[in-house]
Image (cartoon, rainbow over all chains, first blue to last red; front, side, top):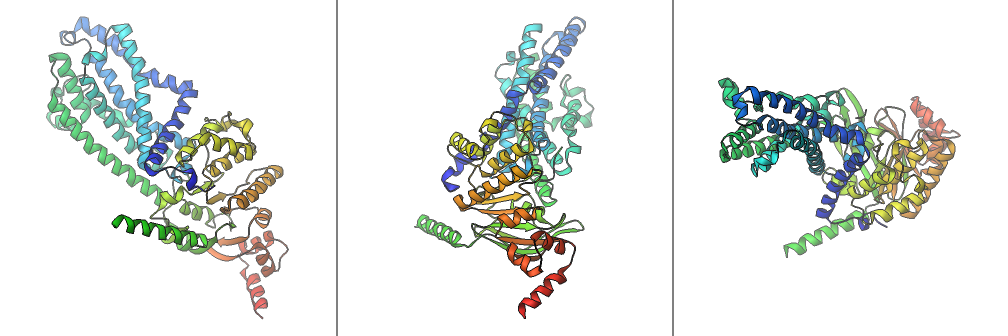
Length: 275
Length: 273
């Protein structure tokens, strides 16, 4: 029986390879309760913490009293960005921990197919993580993120796209510099937190920092979120700008990942990486 | 008309590839890592349907050469042709017809054997995944381990599973890096017998790197001896043994590894006279 007799057409083969990589991590999730617990743990803990802060401020701040859900919505949406990035980076690093990259990159799996699979798994992990936090927010504080309505979908996808762009750069750096750089996966995204204006309006930033924030899709999303919560207005101008910036950053992140991948092949790093 | 021309070109290319006698042909291949010349102007050809060995001491360039054949390392210069096609240009298409196994690359430990094989069967686009896994599991005697996580298998069991992954797409070219490393003599013998049988049944080509000279003598019809990234000698195990005037391939290997090319030169001179 020849190899070709066993194989499918190119499009189906590509879909099959992406599915295979997604399946590989689903198998892992299915049998690993610590991983599932970890996915739900931080969003839930953060939500409880900020819920308490929110309740306190409700009785002490007239600003927050106008929109009691603004802090909780901020926590939950920030977690979309964080989980999106972390999900993509960690799933990739998992291949390095298991010394599996040599098998993957010597197979017909294209790097872009691997990236699509990583995004699929990251999306799933984010939904699992968010799901528990959203559920607890409804149960404990009677706050539903779904009250944001349809804009929630736009916020979610803009944030997860930005998370994926950052996550891809982290993957490239880890590929190029080895597992010594894996801690980047945990803290890199937090560098964006202060200028993402999660819990305060963009206008309170110093002028020079405002320009930085306006160049971040996350800051535009949180500004848009406050607009919905405070004024009941969905700002399309912010949405288009966030989408355009995300497209730009995703293109740059893909180029960076491919450049790091090329460099790793040149330096012979792909079959040396392990725990 | 254009479609017909493209179809004809493809057909001719396909026929040319089939007609190519070599599964693998390397020309003037070099790889430099900074100041280290890992592979230096290597040229060799591996006949279709053969079991060929890449031999050499540690750091001779075997693993780097194999990694270049798999696309894991970019060559500094030179070319690799597989089934008559340029590997650099047709990498992914050719990789679908190849596979490899190495003790230095692992399968995810937490996934069961069946899960791992399923993932790789899908990556290689195998049709009839369940049946293929069942068939391989029976052939390689790993049916009872299919539901067990790879991390809980013994070295011998893990080698069989790695072999199952390497054969999942029924490759036409199989690269094996030390296929019996860390196996007990019984397990190693079982693997060698299986590879011999599989090669005959499939007609595939096997290129292996090994430090076990008895294994090479038993399995390989052709060997390439490397030292410091260069090809220093080649031939069948029997040819080399005769040429170096030794009793076994291991002695030939030691001559070459310890830089005693004069032995071969003397033998060559004597043969020529």
